[in-house]
Amino acid sequence: MAGQKDLDPSSSPRALLGAELRHAREKAGLSQDELGLRLFVSGSFIGQLEAGTRRMAPEYARMLDRELGTGDFFERNCVAAAKSRYPEHFAEAAEAEARATAIREYAPMLIPGLLQTPEYARAVNRAYDPTAPEETIDEWVDGRIARTRLLDHPTKPLLWTVLDEAALRRETGGRAAMAEVLHHIVELGCRGRVITQVLPFSEGAHAAMKGSMKLMEFDDAPPLVYLEGVHTGRLEDDPATVTQLRLAFELLAASALSPEKSLALIETLAQDYAHEELS
Image (cartoon, rainbow, N blue to C red; front, side, top):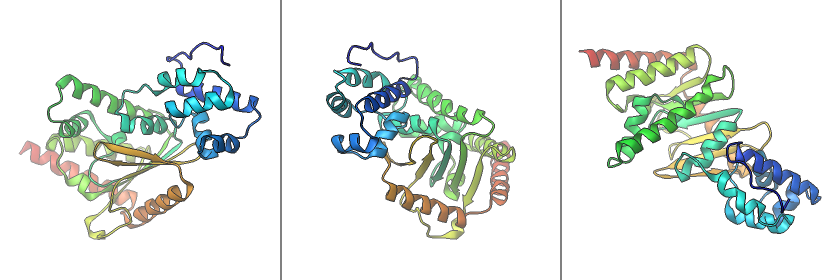
């Protein structure tokens, strides 16, 4: 492999790099767990690299080249595989999201990116960086809306969101933008494309008061959870952590309104925003 050409960045470099890693590992006669031990990571982490759900950082690429005898192949090509239109702290999560078969997300303060409309996304990004040039905001909005194309498929991925009532009542981008994004959520729910529940204020304390979470499942890799803060974010693959957060999501869903009652509430709020905008 050391003499191979660089991977073509136009051909899903993350997936190609993962396939080459699997080939090199099997050629070396190593299991995922055995290779993971040599890199001081879990076997599931190696599996995620091979499946393309985790980014290959340069330090791991160098260790892989050393352990697998691949020259500098992985070190050279991990740069192309790491290129992304998304901020550094979110890029890996966005790429994992695109490969997920199921996504379960709790959003405490804003509508999740996969459900956003352009004007809502513009308001969110402008609030994040009030001094950014307009062309930069345009790029960010385009990137966020591009993610929503995952929902163009009629059934995959499964998307199940629990929205805190605060996310629906925090006026973001003006009343017209709020009416648009809430009508959009209702439309997706009514055609069975997403499952949406609202966690009302009346529920009081709940299992995820400290922040948001996005749980992702894959056909060919262990599950991941993405935790995000202000300009920060991290992916977790520790099985105990993922299990704990999956339970937290299930508790949230159990406390939230049913999907039918949730859509009715969202529709009512959308109409209120629209009528107030016209008055």
